[in-house]
Length: 257
Image: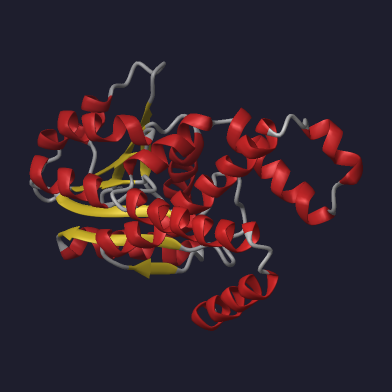
């Protein structure tokens, strides 16, 4: 049997490199394209059985528009971004290939698949979906099948609201005129963990987090909910109503847990 070929656009770094390694382990002949490779995204789209778009969120739409028409019927086109509605829609409209939306719910440093799920969204074609479900299943990653819309709704909380809250915390501390080194001697273990996440978001790849916030179609709605909750708490605290806040928390716990 002919070895299947896989092309990873953005396969020199991050999740693209992780995906390239996974597919090699599964017996695929893997080629990658990046900013500094001689091989181009178009080369991969023209020649590979499976084409994976693993570029930053802000570049994903343009890459799909460029290479989608080159990925012909009978092949598979998929993406690895943390947003699914727009990429899947674009892949469907710009290619005749099988289409799968994919979002590994972890970072590229993960080595042990235990407890680390991969989301797969059906776009077009049963063969392509079955292929990728088998790839992740053989590697030991639990596969969560859902729609792009449900995925983005959940990510509006898991990612957008979560990162928004982290950004607000960092900016509020900075506005108070207190630096991280000043806080460290007074910090509890829980607060140190929070501030380590603040440091990561603000100093390592801030563009990734802002793209997640800007790109999720449900971000506005979830941030509006956040703002309403902040207003309610602020009103209670201005009046010194600790009992009211406790009741609000108890009611919330019933909904959450």
